[in-house]
Image 1: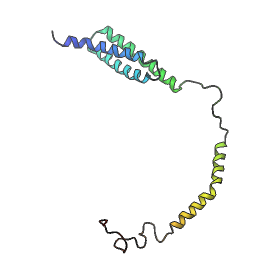
Image 2: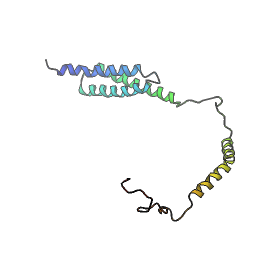
Image 3: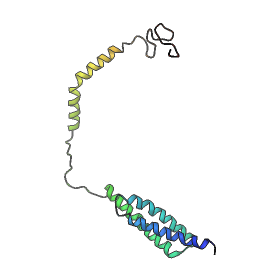
Image 4: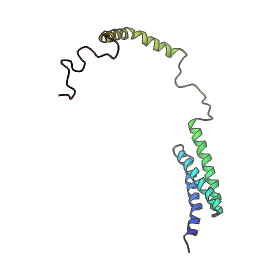
Length: 152
């Protein structure tokens, strides 16, 4: 016998096994992404097995089980993300309109003097002696007191 009949029987069974794994992992929000990915791969394998004419029953069962696993995983992921839920009740943190802006304005007013003082000190340190980007006096190349180019 050749190896071809043994390979033919493996693809539908593998697709069915992967579909079962996807179905078993589709109910839990932590494993639902795995169920979705494995379900899609199993569906692709099962469709490939059907098109190639391999065993029809395991291939058809794999298609049905993989499709159910994909739908279940997608529903579990959507519900976990909050799609379609109406969150009734009171919010945990209630912020009145304008409160945040008022708090920020009050903080800006408290720190205004310190910010102005720091700005004046910075401007006094950067006393412009010429256009921006011009070398400072005594710091140019070849001037006395400057380090040689090789760092020695």
